[in-house]
Image (cartoon, rainbow, N blue to C red; front, side):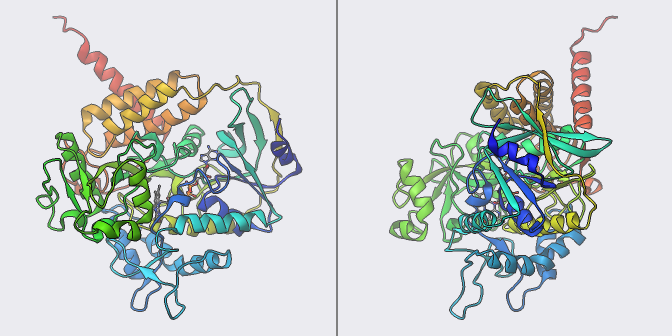
Length: 533
Ligand SMILES: Cc1cc2nc3c(=O)[nH]c(=O)nc-3n(C[C@H](O)[C@H](O)[C@H](O)COP(=O)(O)OP(=O)(O)OC[C@H]3O[C@@H](n4cnc5c(N)ncnc54)[C@H](O)[C@@H]3O)c2cc1C
């Protein structure tokens, strides 16, 4: 057993799972109250936070207001945003940006020393704080990692993955974790009277994604398996311009390129977005993603063409994207960049209230793994980092006000079977099916097939990591099957219109998802049976 994990026996009441923005910010806000952060990847790695290019939305400009920010958030969310959450999120933004500055995040400033504010699509004002252009994520994670490492009350345990929550009478009692780099290691059980789930998103459940491998929905799965209510799992945002150069995950070609005049063309050189939306390439993200998807599905391919708009200026203006292209053998100053939509952000997650509390007693969730109601059916750009800090702070405050007495400690090694490595082929098949059946454009037939396949996998596999991936995949597919309309990021070719009567959030459980799978199996058995007169 590792010394790091043995150290847990020394106590520490709160266990935070995840070392991205939500997890680290929560630990810092809890200080000097002891907290233990468990992270699958070493801090600074394996977290979407580190890859964020845009920044954080905050209504700080003269003439801007929290109300205007909330109105933009509500408009983007296609009828499903919780309006109280949206307005309170926007109001708390300034305070959390101040906190980040205190923790050492070097946000860009203008010539007068005020925070420089950038503009992003669907925001009605300049309101994005950023760092050195497109380096916000890296700078945030670097500053918070340093602040956490210097904080004596925070213990960090890296290289351990949480694989199950222990729950008695709907209250958390502990957590089962396992070493990542040793496939023969037995899982270790930790007692904990408060667990904060901050494990990030689910993008890596898809074959095409911009998310790190750690974003494979494990936190959502273990909460769901413990009985937690899951909200809006069907809503997955796809980024329209992931660069297709054979890298997994795919590098991102930022939206700012289209803002600079880069166009979207097919392999005949035709601009296909002009026929689809009056704003063409600058249409909302989900519409562009569907346009790109349709072009690829029709066999015409999709490319981002910056030859005219940027040409030789490309390398200087977009060094990160330029480097990614060159590494893939593309010179974007001279060649169109091959692109495809890729899973980017999960609006759904563990359902939480305004304090970050889940439906399981003493289980909180913050950041992308949670669903607060702030994003509805579609996230407004740069609101996710904001939501992560606002809710991480609320969770810390709520925990501080709760009576949590039992210290965390080691319960011992589990006699459950040793793990074996994630079966690569099965994981690959799951990811491929998520992209092809539960992707940008969905329909009942393919969703039903996916629901049945994921339900069978989560029931039958003996591999815990694969089972957790299948659990989250099942929740996404079953809710997408159940939502018979198109809304925000969820698009059904068999129900292409929004249905006003369905303008409510999904609240579901693993039990309900399994039930949907059971009914589909039943229907298939019945329809397959020959009629006997
Ligand atoms: C390329 C890219 C660009 C983006 N740009 C922006 C942007 O400009 N603005 C914006 O607002 N949002 C942006 N987003 C979204 C935003 O980055 C994320 O929503 C946010 O960072 C999520 O933070 P988090 O703390 O919830 O999760 P993460 O930062 O993903 O951290 C999750 C942590 O949990 C750990 N973990 C996962 N599973 C387990 C487990 N089972 N056990 C133990 N540890 C586990 C991981 O190792 C990691 O430490 C972007 C996302 C991507 C991928």
